[in-house]
Image (cartoon, rainbow over all chains, first blue to last red; front, side, top):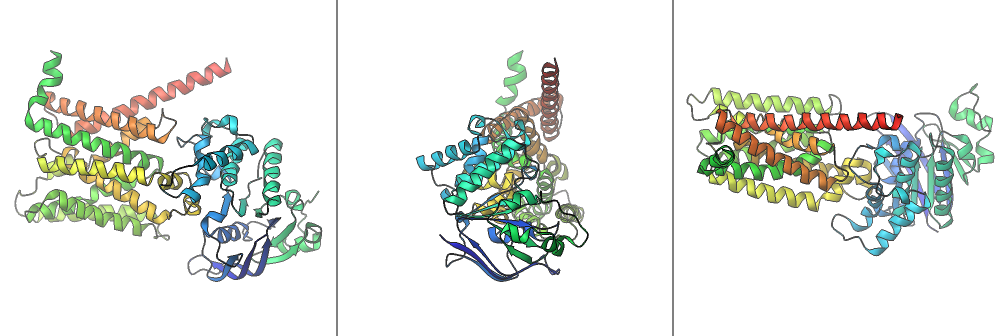
Length: 239
Length: 281
């Protein structure tokens, strides 16, 4: 299984100060890594760097021995950041997950259509295929965005607060699909504010502008470590 | 009676040319306007349409093709608007706003210093049915073909960009270049339309039909098709109103297009209210 490696990464916006520094971080295939930390700690920034959406000022990312190609990275964004009023059906939104494989003009093949259908079935939105996002609940919309990423069948799956504000059914469906991605060998990285969700991950990276702790949840999600990121005196519920 | 009202005007050659140019402009504006409305960048469309004024003014003064002058000016505006997206400190809209009033001001300066009536300002700003030449119809046809071709070829990139720029980037479609292509086809639609409807009013044909269509459609290709049909009906009704009531054709087309939007928005609102009452009942 391939592994994503980040070496000597620093990120800043324009000429501003460094907002994220990662000297060395390894994200193994077949594992789920949770990124936790307070607002502004660099969780989303780190995901964007891994996705190639934000070029680091220094350092490099490799997947296997090379820079990750576009098509190997899929990302689930928060549904609240997507304009649900667009005249697009659920099936069309999920089909965007195949764009990295087919490009601008490549014809969709049977395999692409199967990947789209399977992705919708995995998060239980297949029966909503002809509906529009605006007609769906928040949880259903989030599942559609998850399906788009699943349809890509990427080697690296990134989730940016994809569990936030979900109903229990949607959370279970997305969590199960994410675990299946992990089981087929994908590198899964999820940014979350929810420490209970983070506790289910194989590895947790605690961020405060840089990784202040990295390891199994039992070692990282402890009061002494959490205080390094969230500050002293802050009670962080973990149960 | 009906024949005299609807058909007879179009037996005149100059109205036939205006109709043909308007219908071709309707194709460009309906297709491109759909992206403009969905991307919520109507202001950029307005900026591009106003930005062609100096190019047209200079071209007319030196005896060059106004359409090519408009195209050159629009090219400059596309480059300027693309560059404005990097103006983070003042914001993209502020930068584009300054660019478009700057270009419009420059155009007015050139016209005011021309010392002659070489540039028909009214026709430039508000369109002129009499001013549509065969060359304009050819340009409108080329623009319609190009905007359709680019919209089809770039469909996935435009959809991804419209949904979320990050999705476009992850799919391998450069958001920056996709935006430039989008601006380029907006510019084409503007250049193809300004002779009939005028530089100041072309944004009505660009935005109103698509804004009307999007209220009732569930898929983007349908939005485009209905926007084109609405643009055609606005052109026909506008030209007829212009002929029978001696009105400026550009203004009449723009008013009809905006009235179509008001009507569809009203119907959409009523349908939504009836739906809410039915659900509550």
